[in-house]
Image 1 (tube, rainbow, N blue to C red):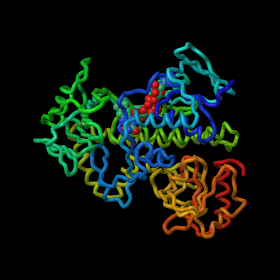
Image 2 (cartoon, rainbow, N blue to C red; image 1 turned 30 degrees about the horizontal axis):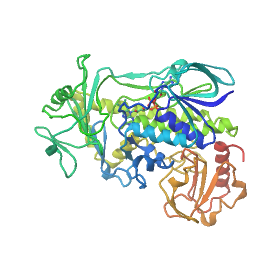
Image 3 (cartoon, rainbow, N blue to C red; image 1 turned 90 degrees about the horizontal axis):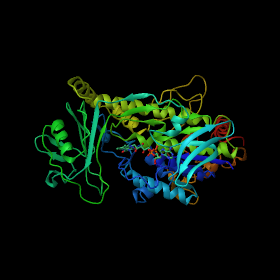
Image 4 (cartoon, rainbow, N blue to C red; image 1 turned 30 degrees about the vertical axis):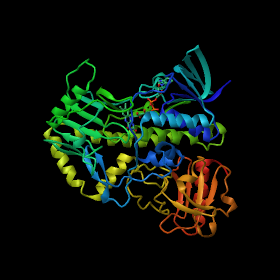
Length: 531
Ligand SMILES: Cc1cc2nc3c(=O)[nH]c(=O)nc-3n(C[C@H](O)[C@H](O)[C@H](O)COP(=O)(O)OP(=O)(O)OC[C@H]3O[C@@H](n4cnc5c(N)ncnc54)[C@H](O)[C@@H]3O)c2cc1C
């Protein structure tokens, strides 16, 4: 017996991949080392493009508990503990969903089970070898050791990934061993909290805006009152003496005194736990040398990690790795993948991961101690009065500037407007980017584009006059759904979306001409195989 796909690791990213494969008709087997879901407090929420992505799978509703679509944050955000004034932007790219990681895992696990995925808890991948046809996987379980052969093995087994190590894939990067981050859920004096804006008014220091890290020349401080939870209070310091002592609220108070120069009387948290009380020394920003080796693929923290910088890039990237890989791997297994499709997982996601390294390292530099950094920050804060700078940094942090190289015409540099290419027609600026927010009027009624992509199938959206694309038999592809809707001002007239909701082709012409029809046919075949 050979299993199509074994996923090592039932964390958020492994479970997301399991859902995506199942939607595409492939049933993976998830092996999770822990007998029960981890209660360790990790992510407090999701940030960036992934929030929109989850809406495109109907998961935003489950996670937020509300049928309302995601709305961007249009007030402020941060970069290197400096405020980004998002009100300067006509359309903010920053989306956030405050929900703890264990809830994310629960929702994804429920969804995977609903889709028929088998999850074996207490089963750990401990060995692997591969030949041309399969990966042989060694597993320990409560009933003893056993072996499986799988066509593909996915390492979704976190930062210390056994899959990565057993495959001999290096994990180069930077270790910040001077940095100590202390965090705790705690109570703060109720009368310090400004009822108007939620700021924490610290006597002797001043107002601390919630969720916005504050930097002083001694370190960093942040106050994050998550809805329905006690506030999470965090400090960052450098060159702290080593200690084996258990972390305590008193240690955090002493750290706050050093960072802010005043005392903040923290109390134990109220309400149901588990509550965070931790000290993390050091941090890593690393990207795996390869995301794929033969029949083994890496996703999420197994492929890349980022030292804490604010803005939580981990799940924004990891969940999108899973969504990028899922449909490609399923097409390969079904035998419908065009040549080279699977290898675009590595090229596309590696460039997104490297972009996030740039983000993490730039932010680390800006929060470091010292008066020279204070000088750098003053220059930066002057630049941040320019809306274009705010937009670029907001897009970088949210991962909203990712543009996959979908054709040879697409400009190389991510984040730049597409320039005039030599000779050929100018490619539509949406090509390679995540699907735009569109409210559509279809023959069956109004619908958001995000609601049309929940099946995870390729989609050709036809907004041309008279639905001309849908009526052209030569454009029919059995892998691709076609939806028609009324033309709209200021919207593209047609879009081809891959299952991961990135735009593979787009048009702005009321009636695409024969050259555009030809480029659409080419895009259909490039991504979804022969017609
Ligand atoms: C304190 C903290 C705060 C964070 N805050 C944020 C945040 O606010 N936003 C954000 O986006 N990210 C945040 N992150 C990062 C985020 O938690 C990670 O990016 C995320 O957990 C990665 O998910 P994953 O599925 O790749 O790996 P993991 O969550 O590490 O899951 C891997 C799974 O694999 C299992 N496993 C390991 N080895 C094996 C094996 N050999 N066989 C079988 N199973 C195995 C593990 O038990 C685990 O369940 C934070 C991380 C920490 C530590």
